[in-house]
Length: 69
Image 1 (cartoon, helix red, strand yellow):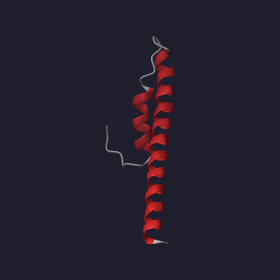
Image 2 (cartoon, one colour; image 1 turned 45 degrees about the vertical axis):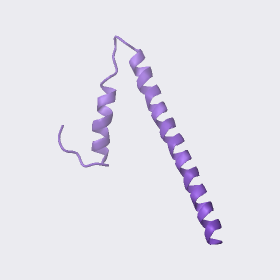
Image 3 (cartoon, one colour; image 1 turned 180 degrees about the vertical axis):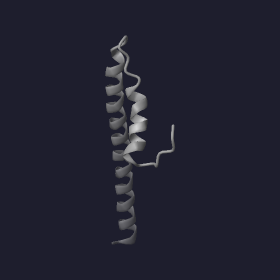
Image 4 (tube, one colour; image 1 turned 180 degrees about the horizontal axis):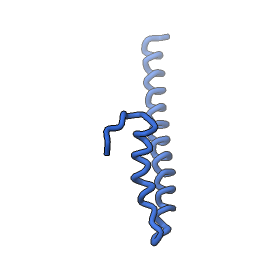
């Protein structure tokens, strides 16, 4: 693997290529699992960030109350 600058389209293409390469003609379940895995990852990150946003909202509210702003 050549050095690819983080955040570039080429960087992400290289990473996606690893998963695309997992598609297996002899086991069609791999394609379904790749797609399901992608959805699971999105859902897990969304849930994590939703909870983090809620924690920050609670912190903001407590600070505003404490400072009477």
